[in-house]
Figure 1 (spheres, rainbow, N blue to C red):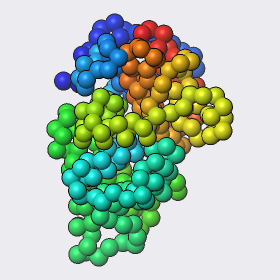
Figure 2: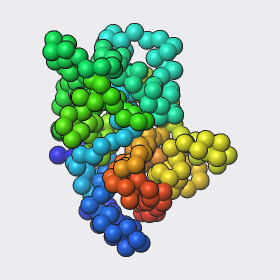
Figure 3: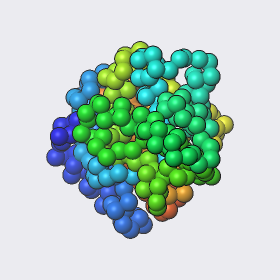
Figure 4: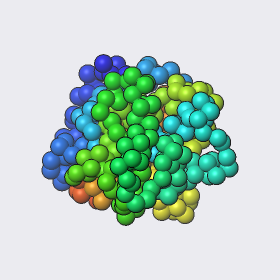
Length: 296
């Protein structure tokens, strides 16, 4: 059962928008895209109060940097349980992981969350223990008992050039153990953060501060990797606020966004596009956000 109430009119609108975007020169769009779209009926909703529509939302994709949202929530959970000491360096890494999408910061945080480090291949005694530790975030996700999280995998660092040594071995044959998320899982996690429904309300406030994106054109021009241009935020009208985490690499262009105009109801939109055509398409996500926003 979805965490939102399916609405037929939204489902029909989403189908229509996908058909139009496909016809505009994106053949096979539906085969490479997943969408979860949720609207709310009050400015400050609680978790589970949305109505929405989806396309292929349970399909597991390589999430690229969107997985950093999960790691950020895990840090707050570990801090609450006293499993992780807070420090200036941890907070710097959190800021850089979410704000700048730093892979170096993410690697540091994965090490802290799991008590592991990268390096050369381990011997037969150390290797099973290392693998168990690396799956601690997955264990926590399973404990939430959200059906949207079935099959997800959040046990790998993110890389600029790729894994080496024990990390490469941990990816498995044909990279079968790489990170995997669906738009449904990502949307429910982002909704929980934005509504204060996970870890604690103060933790969610801190996470929201990290996810806050500026739509100011001057600030965006000053930061070419602003996670707005080429993503959902670029399709928003003036006056909106945006909280988001994007992911982009040679085989993926994804975004998870919560956006809201002053005194209006928020919208949750998560879109994953996989494959080289989607990765190179800088207008798809803005066009999709704009088209769906016109229906609200």
